[in-house]
Image 1 (cartoon, helix red, strand yellow):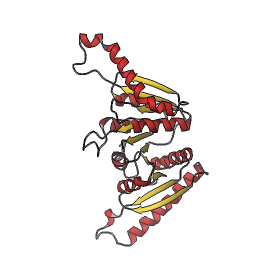
Image 2: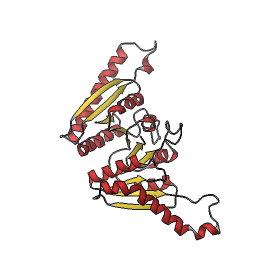
Image 3: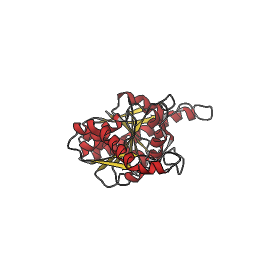
Length: 281
């Protein structure tokens, strides 16, 4: 199933709409989850019974609103709701065990003013085992293009598989971007002579990385886009004309198994469209 987090914010409403659309595409049920976090009120200042009851009633009202949004958006999708006690990020991470993907707004009602990505959405994207799609604001016009980042790591396969599936379901073009930069020192006469060979090798890297997924989805039109620029800059620029940007999250060491890499975080903060973070198995 697809799980969408909802807290009543505009970004969360957009996340429910996106999740409903994807549930229809994937022929999956949609579950909308709202977390009731009691801990700020578990002290002598607040009445122990009145506040939790008030929060539960407010949560039930929010879930009814979110369910109406989803059913209006996609009447054919099966929708249910869950009111769960706990911190929002922890609740969504626990739900990830039975989710095909989790969809969250980029910043909820509790986010800091001016923040591009809220702590809940970042925490879930950091640690969820399933793909996490972060939605910023209302959906724009359909562009007909999915962007996926391709690097030189052997474990970018899950991100490519997800991106190809999304492109196939939507009938969209897939833009496979590989961005690279010259090593420091940035330029030398020997390197200048070899730049053409270097560019060709980077293009070959993309060709080899997408080959197996292209065979599985022969109807998907693929653009191989190799750029000599920082990956965050390349993916952010491409996101302005895309419906979705897909980035991988690699587990090269113990720290990166817990936290996203700099590229994934940079794209989450700066992309102009929804971003899907797909972890390696």
